[in-house]
Length: 265
Image (cartoon, rainbow, N blue to C red):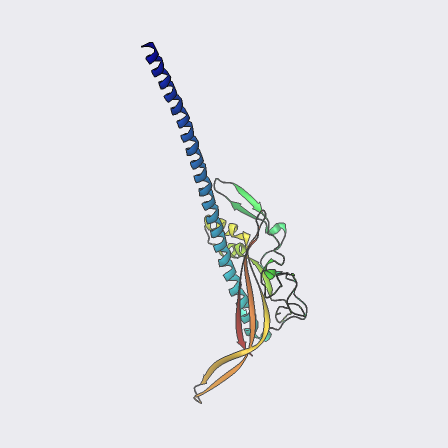
């Protein structure tokens, strides 16, 4: 009987040992699964963040394209300043004689301490940032303007941009958040103003080049003579627009768009 009792006791001890090992294995497996879920969740969150930033950059690029097209129309109809169109300066913008180096004219911001901005984050934390120089990021993002392999400008004589009546280049950089901050200055809520501050990490840039004569057909009518007048001479312009997300500690994100518009001579 003693031998049977000892055997049963050893058997119970072995079963207890097996249960302990099984418990440890299950705990390890559950820990690994939990860690994997955390990694996957963090990856999804990061991916969603990137998608949101890209979408916002795309919207800013659309703004750049529209502003570039408006620049061409303003030169054709006459610059629109302080609510008055100066028709004495209207012209079909021609290209500058010098080669464009990709540096934009800063329009609504400058790279100095005056244009530092503050962002309020959840929890009441605030951080100060400065405007940054985008250099020739926009220009070099277009294969049609720059050879992406060699980095050299396309064409035998280099790339040239159009100029306005006063010989200022048609290559402009604006800060998107500064544009919104100006419009929200008088009647925007604190939350809206803070969102505008966050958008100061985004810039919209455009440059324009005259690409030559193109067919244009416009029709007009004369009530008195019941006649029409049709022409087919036009001048074509290519508008390059960029949305750029850039700032301290950020890898620049660029979305580029382009369009062609034809104006009558």
